[in-house]
Structures are given as structure tokens and as C-alpha cells.
Length: 224
Image 1 (cartoon, one colour):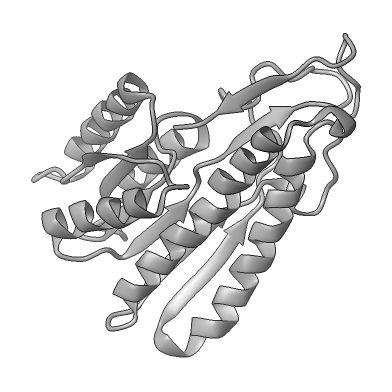
Image 2 (cartoon, rainbow, N blue to C red):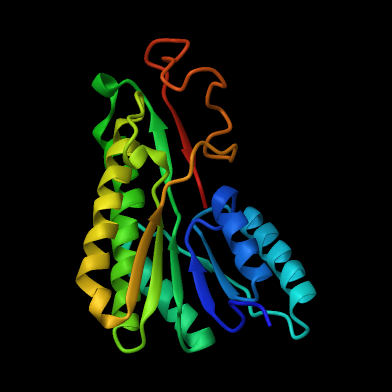
């Protein structure tokens, strides 16, 4: 029997990169996976197929993977995502707050709508998902795992809103961990180093603080 057999996990931003790898690994451990995506439906379907293939190998009866579309920055979308998961499975055991985006721009040229969107997805989205999960976990316990990357503590020039959102997410995780430790809810944060995913594919391979090759260049990467 796999160690997570029968557990139900929701992975936000699960269509590509770390989210995809996480969903597949949970399937490998026997868990049922709800794979959230925002706009990359085909990428999410690939994740679903890989998770199902993996789970069919490790579990004779397979697992109950599912796709759940939604923008984690949208409160009503997050509520709907949780409703769909609970309708399908009856309960949720683990939330993986993985959805994230970043926008590259010199800070003095950063448009506020770009800044606001990064914080909306990376911080507000994680908060909304955690809040809805906690409401469910209060009677039964559960686990929340936040993905902050190393930029929770390491500066990232040209990506001010991303670095700010991850630092705040780290603090949010610690706050939730202390607030709900007595109610059977475990909250942890992981901070992986740079990984070659769709979010980082276009970053320079040289020193991470190297400025853009052309002044004022802006570009945006998304996950999910």
C-alpha cells in the first residue's frame, strides 16, 4: 500500500512545471489528484494523462484524478473549485498552493496592473485557497503546502512583485501554521531553487541578476 493511498489532493497551477511534477508524484504515492489550471487546458490534460498512467501502475484500482479550471485570484472561482472537489470526493486532505506568475520589468517602469496581477495570483490566490481549505479542515484536519521558491528570502531584481509576493506568502504560511496547529491543520512552505520550467524557460542562463538585454523590456510568464 502506498503511503498516500486514498488521500485527496488539490494542486493549483498544476498544468505545467512544478505543479505537473507534484501532481504526478502524488499519483505515484497513490493519492487522488485534482489538477487546477487557469487557461492551459491542453497542458492540464497532459498532466491528467500522466497522473492517471502513473496511478494505474501503482494502484490496481487506479486513482480518481480530475481537472478543475479556475482563476485562483478570483474568490468565486476558488469557492467553486473547492465545491467541485468536495462534490467529487466528499473530502479534501491536502492543498498544494503552487499557482504563480511573474512579470519581468525594471521596477521604475512596472505598470501597476502588472504588479497587482502578480500579487493577486501569487498571494491573494494562495490566501483564498488556504482559507477555503481551512474551513473544510477545521472538522477533520488537513495539510496545506505553499510553494514560495527561494525568492521568499533571496532578492530577484527585475521581478519586484514576484519577490514581494513570495516573501509575503512565506509569512502567511508561518502565520497559518501557528494559528491552526491546535486544530490538526499542518501548514508548511517549500522554497525550491531555480528549476527549468515554463515559468523560467526564458530566463538568462548566466547570473540571475543580469539586467535585460534591452532597456524597458517586459515579459510575463505564467503557470496553469
